[in-house]
Length: 182
Image (cartoon, rainbow, N blue to C red; front, side, top):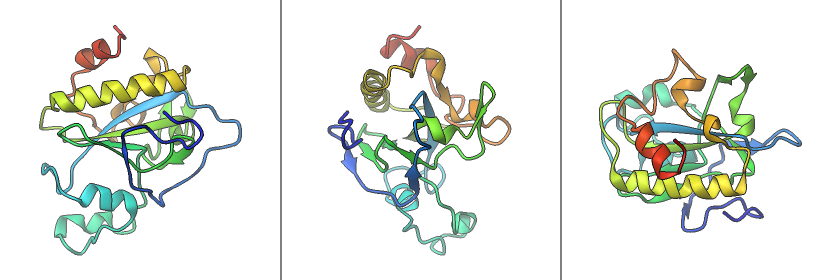
């Protein structure tokens, strides 16, 4: 992790306009795991990147109509084959968590890094994704030691009732073992 640029080494970088500065003095203390696919349940296409970069043509598909005007991003997106794409430098605030709360603290975007896995609630994640996620997590924890075991959560944990990702097929035990958190 290059702390000067906020970019992860080896990640492709597609800058998103959907970010801003973190509040002054705000430390990165939380890692939020998400899942996304566009179209829903389909993988490998350009639409997630287009959504995060603000270029998705929401008229192209009827099921994209509710995405019109949405301004959302994540710091990272991990594709099914393990490729990591970065949209927002980690020192900036990506807009991934929405209305959120953890341990009484609201606005989780202020103090978190968001990682999206290409996937959905109905599917398992790939070995390549777990390997890339584990490697990225270790790099983030080395750069930001405040991200402890209790500070790695799913989107569902900070937005209960509103979000379900990364979903029931995300193997938390496998992931925590890979990053040496039991």
